[in-house]
Length: 148
Image (cartoon, rainbow, N blue to C red; front, side, top):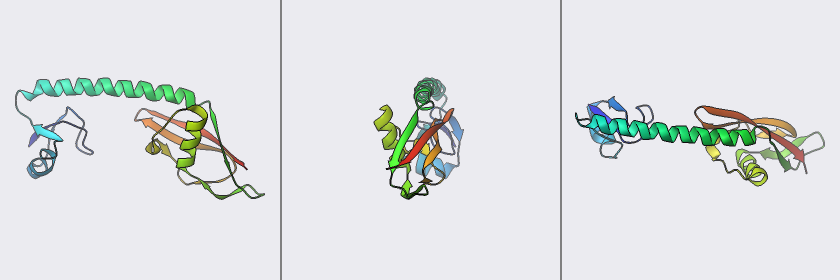
């Protein structure tokens, strides 16, 4: 079954793509949920319009993400937490605390899903936290954890 996607669908395609899917998947899920419409001969122009708007929005999102990255890469974000004499924290510094510190110190509000910690920070010192604001924009945020 050929369908025109009206929104991005994980594992299928992006908005404006004409895709071939199983009949049951299209008829029972994609079309009723409003994710897709049946691809007819007149839909090609609509698909091209959707792709152009998607590409324009993607370019704007990438530019905004690059601007944020330019501000955050040179910055050192400071987080204070209770720690023992050896530098081990009582507890840990999590993604939420990093996001709050970024907002307080730079005024930039990031989405929780944009920051990735492999594991919570449990020691004082300098740590690098991965951030992904766009599929093409990935960078490291430097976080300085100090004892309070």
